Length: 336
Image (tube, rainbow, N blue to C red):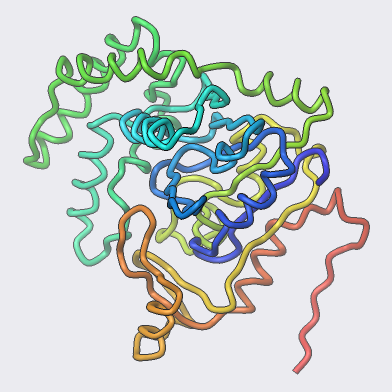
């Protein structure tokens, strides 16, 4: 491994990144999740026990590996605490978990907004997981989001009341139930107390780790063809699960990126709506789904299955190739 290695999905997600990450993280000192939220999952099996990670980097299963949730992640506190408790119940320590103070928080009004927007899209629905990911990122870029550093401090209450007041105007206009700010504050203030001990400035932490010659591994979520900029828009996720998102979602400089591992399957799969040229919506696709156990880690939805799309794969390589690390220039040619 080089200083910072990266594992990314090279298609529509669900390529089996978790298994690659689990192997590489045995050689890593720090494992980092940089983008997305609990709309993605990595399934790892250890000693017959399956762990489905939606927020915590799966590298946490390796003793001595620091698990970092970076600033580019949107965090549902309830889900994160469930993952922490599950690890503790199976005898794992979470003392090596660190959460970025700059990551944004998913709150109940984000989830309600996600469901409302998807319902109102009608036939044009995206196929979102309705976990509040998109609305949380919307608030982040609209600059009304609540970061972890505010979540664990008293001003959290003021921010929630302001946001709920504004969101309720939208819910009311669409005829949907309004949110209760005080109930959210009461419930989520308790979650904040649980998560506060894990919160640090992860940007400084990661750069100090590199100065100490530690090996870092960034765990990609979703995949390139779901990238908000480079994917099959609008049927995409709400972040950049391509190589650029690794830097913006962690604070790591592009010059520190080493090997980039793009993960694919011999066939392909996709969850949700959107174009899928090689899809086999027939007996072949059904057979692939059952043989590959192709059901969503997060939603349990059956995945759409089909052949590997080499044109899409070349596109993913083009987007994610680390030119600075590789001595040989990237070249494409078709042979028929």
